[in-house]
Amino acid sequence: MALNIPDIKRIAHLARIEINDSEAEKTLDKLSGILSLIEQMQAVETADITPMSHSQDVVQRLREDAVTAINQRDTFQQNAPAVDGGLYLVPKVIE
Amino acid sequence: MINQSLKNLSQMLAKKELSSVEITQTFLDRIHQHNSQINAYITLDEEKTLAQAKAADAVIAAGNATALTGIPFAQKDIFCAKGWKTTCGSKMLADFVAPYDAHVISQFNAVGAVNLGKTNMDEFAMGSSNETSYFGSVKNPWDVNRVPGGSSGGSAAAMAARLCAAATGTDTGGSIRQPAALCGFTGLKPTYGLVSRYGMIAFASSLDQAGPMAKSAEDCAMMMNVMAGFDERDSTSVNHPKEDYTSKLNQPLAGLKVGLPKEYFANGLDAGVAKVVEEAIAQYKKLGAEFIDISLPNANLSIPVYYVLAPAEASSNLSRYDGVRYGHRAAEYDDLMEMYMKSRAEGFGAEVKRRILIGTYVLSAGYYDAYYLKAQKIRRLIAEDFKEAYKKCDIIMGPTVPSTAFKMGEKADDPVAMYLQDIYTIATNLAGLPGMSIPVGFSNDLPVGLQIIGNYFDEARMLNAGHAYQQVTDWHTQMPKGIE
Image 1 (tube, rainbow over the protein chains, first blue to last red):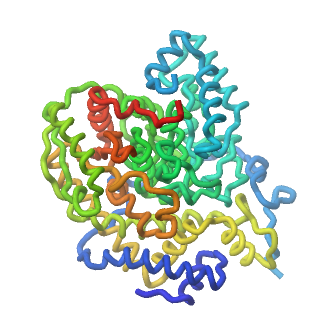
Image 2 (image 1 turned 180 degrees about the horizontal axis):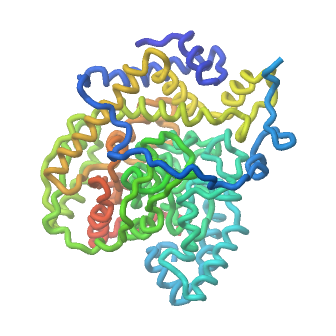
Image 3 (image 1 turned 45 degrees about the horizontal axis):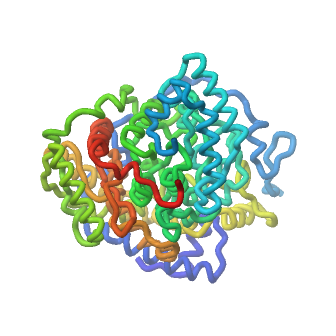
């Protein structure tokens, strides 16, 4: 499927990445090339094939419902752009 | 000293001919001498590094050393190392200091190995030339006008220029093997699930795998003994019995059945590379290996499949970078949405954004079946091809990369041309199989790699094949000019 500029802007919005008009133009060109590469898949008949997500035949492990980690809030928040009193600060979302 | 095997370094340490501090200082001095040109390392912390070396010397003096105690390693900057800046080659994480150790790092720490520093890489491991790093491109020590490959390009250049005893890398579509081929050393991507991904910054979780980058198969085997092992904290870690990867190194190759996939020798393979690979095959015949022709009929689909699955998983994994808990946050914004949009627009580079957008598109409403599900189905076909092949042979050989190292900038503006670098390596990631590259000669003075693909958990046999070849050749001991 051929993409257009409004498609690129919609996808960028879904991905939460700001994009201006000239970037969208350049991106359209590059993404169209990549998508035509991907299109080669459509020639393959795959109706009866089970999708593969993990190379080993494994099942998800269960674990004890027990506390295993200590609270390291102060350590972790040293990497945060903005904190106050142990809380992460973001712009106001509730009026 | 800089070209000694890990085994020799270990013995020299045990005999007190050298101390860990001396070895470590030698490599630090070399880094100071050469890194400004090569840009292999992006973070050094000599205080931490030398403290580890001193501690290792105490362990050795107390008689408690194991094989890698006191040996200095370069760590790809994708591994969280407590107290070390861990950037993943991105502006997004330019100031991120890891609050904990990745499993791989803690495994090295546990045996008293020394962390020399964090190596440059393509941003979030997305690239095959190390040109997408926020911290600048890495130069190939064999020709500084050429790329070292990627994404583990910093580890690769550090290895080639002997700025470390050995290094770690990660491989999602070829990121250990392709730079190993382009920089002329040995690199192994283990079976998916063999090395824990805990603390390794995620790109495409169903494909990402860490592995050793070293001078020889023997060095890789010694590193695998430390890196491999079950880890509760990685939900895809496979509970495979602990192995000694050095135990089979010296087995004879007589009777080893090697498959040559015809698709790996078809159009697109550079003639100079083909010639060197043929010579390596001839050498293997002398060692007693038997060659048969095989086919991987769906191999040509691995790049299209990969460029659906990897970006899809990346778009999900990289959604965590929201400018709230860690990572870059834009300076100015009016509301929460604008904060997300601007922080991510500023924090990610062009290639990372492209892959997030592709991933977002293929996962968006109405396209999931046509792209993601379809790709997962063809992924099974690719894995089945290998299963069929391994009914006829023990291991598979072919070129690692279609050509030698290309010039800086040559493919930087053409993502599709760049993606074709991984045409021979991606299928093993999709199938979850182990793959290795060993240096087997030069074409126009640039290194050429031979790829050895094994069956699941057959790393010991692959390393045996690599080691046997390295006992009768000296490509793996050759160093680029000007770095002695």
